[in-house]
Length: 324
Image (cartoon, rainbow, N blue to C red; front, side, top):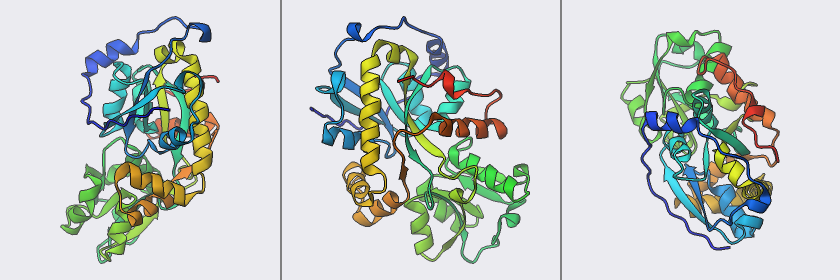
């Protein structure tokens, strides 16, 4: 298979344009009518590309994708990547499921191809100053904490933990701080706790300046929760049913390779992100890959979003799932 990796920062299209595009539809096409694909444009956020990298290296993509180039386009967030998908700038996107749920709630034309990575122990943590005023969740009432973005997976996980501890999330002030900056901001006393994924949490704790307050995976509602999935649009899925099937099958073969193989995930992380081996291994040990995951697991994300008022109406996974 030919491959080409292009990493660029894309600019999201305007909201009005996306809303207009979201209502468009096309007639289903049969496999016999499907046009060959010379280039599959895949939008990526963070390290979502690892299953695709593995699928490419092992020749897992067949049929319409067997001789296709895979062109990666990188985005800073799902909020930027999803409008690009709906606008037709890319064909498939890896994005976090909270961003996907927010888009679906606004009637964006997203369809779920397959799951990717999930929360496991040490994947998502909240840390506090080692000598600071917070030693338990009870101490957070009336304080300011950080997440990388409001209305995000980190924000949602924080809500679950606070409610579990009997604390009204409205009694806690949330502010946005980028992960690389959170430890410094906390050190200056501007926040008392920070939500961090790996390797940022490990770096903060290993420095001796921070300690873990809680781990998302400690809570039943969040344990093994799907973080990111691969999505396309309904129009693209109708026009390319065999390509969708090939992508789904290839990615899930790759997920089977990655599941539990920390060495392989470490190698792929080093290649994709240019990370030092130590940091790449920390990331690899905190990622859970589960092939052929039941769509009901992603339903859990949307149900939590409804429970915590991130969306105003339920999302039925069956309405966005592409039946293979």
